[in-house]
Image 1 (spheres, rainbow, N blue to C red):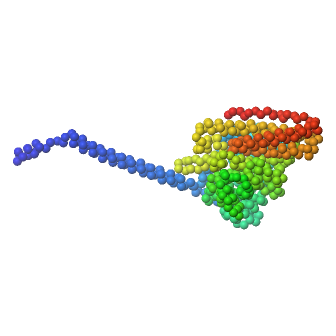
Image 2 (cartoon, rainbow, N blue to C red):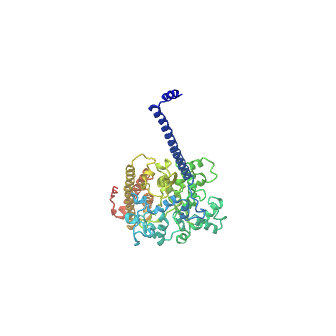
Image 3 (cartoon, one colour):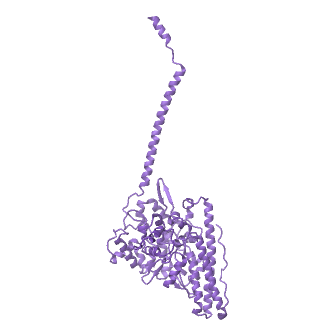
Length: 535
């Protein structure tokens, strides 16, 4: 037995190094796989949690802290539910300065002695009459010759209107509130007092809501501005553009509702507003209504067009009216004014019955390549931003040059400096041509004034006065428009070229009278155009 045991022990040998290495390798593989699986599981869980969070962010765009209704005017209340949008809205008080003052308000002048860091509303924007003295002659006899200042961000729109000398020294109507205040509730309250049916709880777009809106608007338009402005407290705010329940964009201004319906009935081609072109192909029994027919992309421009437009106050009722019956071009609006016999005032120097343009950004943009390409106002002035998975429009409405990468480079594959240089070139070219147009208009005004003083009759001056009306309307249209020609460069140069041509025709008409009046034409001071300095 001992021999057998010895033999068995002698046949049992230790595992070879190869076998031990193989066992260790398998253990390492299994261990690594277990660790990798664990790490992968953790990473997958983290990824799932991140995806779930981003989905929640993208779906939960509203915090639902405040109860927003048709009566919620204060933008701060909306800001509780939409803090990102409200943050942009209040920062319109800090808008960046654009290349030319016309395209964005400059920082205010400290004309009231306000201390640094104080309330910016206590200051005033810089005066256009000081930077462009020709305007004093062009607007002589009208309120704009008293006070005419650079525009600033939306945060200042109501304050600047209430403080301008144009409303302090001249009687102005309540119709001015259309573009400078959050007025939807004020209009509806006035409508209810005037006998309109329903309550403020009715949706604005309902039949009762619309009757309240229009009735109150009609009642407030003819009121003195000082009285009407007591009815409002805020500049344009969230309720003026958004439905409080669905947040969709909507039209709230009666003047625009009537104006866009009249435009739809015209023959002016509007390829950039496809919903109007589709309406025109129908039976037209019901007036065009942007709230029912316009696409969301169209509304991203039409909501802005409620205010950034040309207008006038029609009749004793001071009904705010957009002159779009023939179309949106300068000559089409002029033709309407001629047909109805409208003039804003009789020029104090020349006696011409002239027009004052307002802020026709929508009309000029409609003639440009961006409108034709389907680019909306908000695409450039309120570009999309992202925070996590949340995408929203930047509500700091301002010049696109403040955020070229968001406003321009999403479509244009050029460097930021190249884009800025192209914009700068367009605006400098426009400014130079605008200066020439204003010089020509001022020379015509002075020529008519001198001929009148020398004894020329109204009949003899009629032709030159009519040419002044045409020339001044076109120069002022570009002066009052805020893009300094960028919205439609070719159309802008055409308008200014016509302005210069009409003005020179007018001075020629006066020159024909010179043998009778025996007055030489005096050169206008500052008649030399100085090209704008490079940036």
